[in-house]
Length: 235
Image 1 (cartoon, helix red, strand yellow):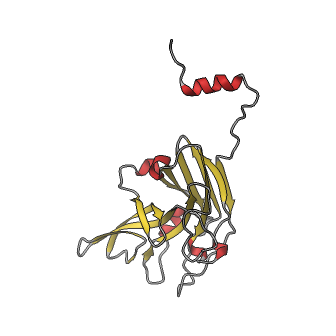
Image 2 (cartoon, rainbow, N blue to C red):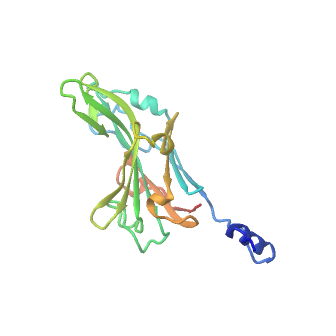
Image 3 (cartoon, helix red, strand yellow):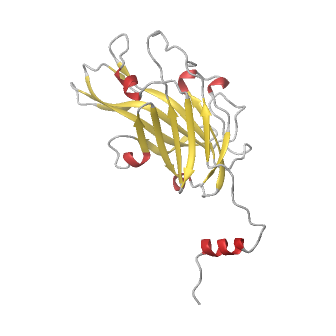
């Protein structure tokens, strides 16, 4: 006798029992963040810092999608120069993931012991790839450099860290332009930066409820720079 696939069998069983209920736990979360709540850049009042006005987290088919919106385009951010004629890359925000939705396990963000329970941090940056015309030295990340000295590419990038009591363990080194999987994991267009995290990367089983928040980097280290926690199912 041919056996039915487990998913189909479960559906037929539920059809015969009124007690079976659809899982209506949320698969997405949204945040609104005030505009112009960032701090002035030290000694450079004219520098326009990354400013988060909205964030989203959603899951489907084993992928967690995280995105951030600014009130201006990413291209415009990259076009600006410092007072000295330099370009600068900066940390945009860091998402924190509580992989088991249990605040009694995991770690807290730096300087925020009142926010415990996160297993992973995921920083998103507006960075650069830079190469010295004089020495050929290559650098990448949140670098500041003189465009007359370096050839550069804009690189919106993200990393994934597992949090331990006294250190961060790199799970996924910086993913950015030039990496083979860039197009499937990172998107920067208009005023939005979006990344995709496979559940298997963090060892999270589909159907697990997780807790998520984010820290707006340019808003400073204070508690007001952190969003509220929201839960969703990693579907």
